[in-house]
Amino acid sequence: MTIAGFIGVPPRQAGLASGLLNTSQQIGGAIGVAVTSTSSSRAPKPGTSPRQAFTTGYHWAFAALVAIAAAGALAAFVFFRGVHVPAPEAEPAPISA
Image 1 (cartoon, rainbow, N blue to C red):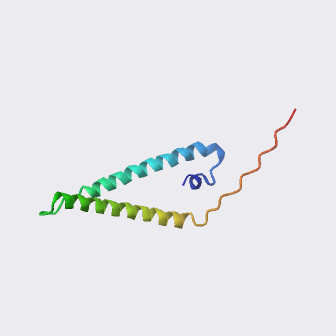
Image 2: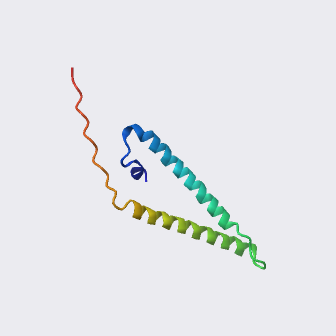
């Protein structure tokens, strides 16, 4: 993901790209924790045992995480399908005195 985040970024904007990449990773992790904790703390149906309610909550949490991971994999396949990494530009030889 880091390589894909830096494709086509000029060297003078590498710091900006790095900041955006790190911010998106942090926000994505926070959203993942929020979705998981929300879906795992569903109210149990009347008459279910606490163990069954706990297990059902985790079932829905993992199902939500699988759906998010599948959506991310699909998006990566669709959006980065034709992306090619350009060859690095040759640096000029140092001038010796």
